[in-house]
Amino acid sequence: MAGADRMSESAAVLRGAGLRATGPRVGVLGALGELHHATADEIAAYVAPDGVAQSTVYRALEHLERAGLVEQVTLTPDRRTYHRTSSAAHLHLRCTRCGDLQQADVGVLRRLAQTLDDTAGFRLDTEHPVLTGVCAACRSVSEAE
Ligand SMILES: [Zn+2]
Ligand SMILES: [Zn+2]
Image (cartoon, rainbow, N blue to C red):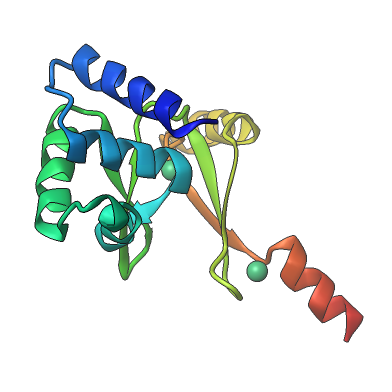
């Protein structure tokens, strides 16, 4: 996708949320559209070539979070990452060997959530759950050994 398309899409999202489409906000939203999950520092590194300072990125993230366009997700205890709230509810699959993060359809969890509700009265968080395991690449390495 051309960079210009992405910029106008981000600008439209910002205006829809009642925010002014400033350059840094457009840049941060665009960065998250590409990176999907990223820390503030990773976003800052991504938009740095466009001349956006780190402190500006942090401020833009605050505004976007308050407007409900991005939210923080704790994928690992030591990494505070952000993702766009417009990306549909998804399951995070984190590899415990290489740290790789994938997204999967949250539908596979719905039956489990229903069962837990029925049997234990427990309401599972199915918005942004993180499941840990071993990814396909790491598995193929260990199986080849
Ligand atoms: Zn996510
Ligand atoms: Zn892995």
